[in-house]
Length: 293
Image (tube, rainbow, N blue to C red; front, side, top):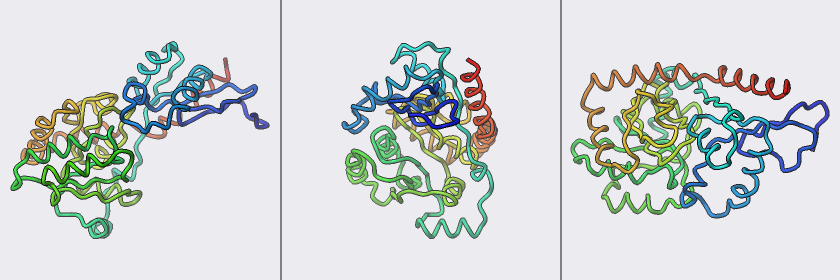
């Protein structure tokens, strides 16, 4: 495979073409959780995990990863030198930091049937996103204090335990799954939420954290994978399975105005560090480095 005039090839989603003739390659590896926890993923990805990803990692001149957590996983799992990896964080779109207009807020509230106060979790309903811990934490909060959860994201693989947990924990009236939401609804959904919940079992980055920060919404999250690296001190972090601590953090954010204001300010400052222009410039540096060599 070769296109006239091309000087290199970049695989932006964990893989390079299996046959590349005469072109140096760069590959972006977003995360490698499937290697340590295959039970979180569908079983039909064996060709990608056993052939495509390892071949791409070893074939590439340089490897881009969004976090140091992913870089460490690459060196551990594939034995490549750390010097071949470049950490380039993602950015966050400016739309999240621009206040949604009153008319858009009203439209979004009506479109999704939102209550006046709600918690927000953004992510496909699948094992790794750890909705189960969110639900258990919600159930720990007395009904009189409980703020309902709005879950934004489609139903992915193995979502039945989540649906069962809603029923078994008697949260039918406290949880709503509204499906996928895109621009311009998503920034408004973040901005109107009381808090964003992000207790993932592992992440190679964790973009919803930055989106919430930019929107001025405080975050409670897990301390797994790259989440602490991205969140810094701007989110309240707990172990992924600790629903009691997650519930405590939610209650603190909802009742302590000073804490909430501190977390919102810290989140906005943190989000400002992550821009797509900086990411693009870093990608250009990688390309130039490969071509020089």
